[in-house]
Length: 416
Image (cartoon, rainbow, N blue to C red; front, side):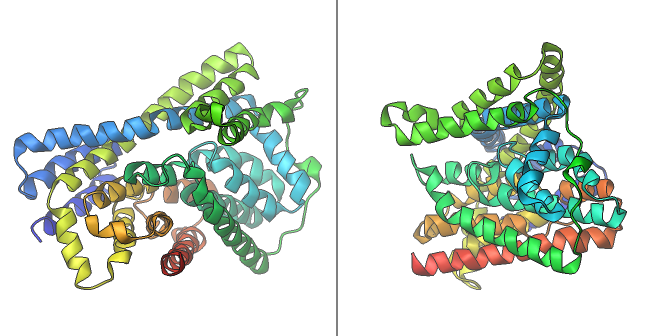
């Protein structure tokens, strides 16, 4: 149990540094990595290699993915083409709640960031209804819907990090979506029905949605995603072109497709701002990798396994670790990265069904999305809602989604 108390101290330090002193996540996580290593009794010469190895592993997994996703998002935002995407969805579903939910759900995966997709959708969604409370409901709908796809679907960073770190589904990562996609859609449908029952919203004319007015704007808005999907499909179905199914290559192609659809001045502005935003995200995630690397190199995995085996079935270990980390630092990708790194050192979890493992980690990443979660504060600022309102409309729905996902994972474990 030598590493459990240092781990608890580390979680407190992360929480205090984030909430009280507002330190950048990278600095917080790197500093906490050193502190944890020292308190856990690791040799000083072993701490820094564990930090650099963990950070490097995350960069190799997510560097291209994050840069391309953020770059595409910034290009669409700078050019105003996001409005065309929302207008397209609005023309199909015809209802404000369904529009907000579908937009959030669809965009958070290809843009590789649920927060980014929410921020660029927010100004448009507020035009779908004139009532302030109704607009607030639409914003919550888009935020929660975006998290559902972002946490459950491949190739979003949460699931991508899990299967890459744990070495699951080699050469066939899309298989996870055979279960995760219908589960996420059922959860989304249930969420929309509950929202609709609580607060019915009248549909507004399509003219209420601002559009760019650019010739061919709708095709240009969807073009990067069409390119990404086309490459993934062709690469999966045509063996000689299997390399095209690599998500890094597909997203690079999508980024170049986005660039060719906008003028040069927008290209330069979007790339400059996108590079800055992507750099911040990547450094934060590298900090998470560093923390996970030090934890994995300590006695923590063995200690927590002994503790859990005496209280809970070993199959719940991925969920428990992920939920604890999510409560401590709030970032879902950080939760996934650290949890997966820890689990690679625990042979006992190898008995768990791979799909159940992924779903349990994702379930933990939904839990306790409270004050340590940066998205909590983004939603509070944009909606202008009271603290209790954010808890009621964001934290609790995601907690419910996490519990449903855990139940699905347990069913998969028991039946497959």
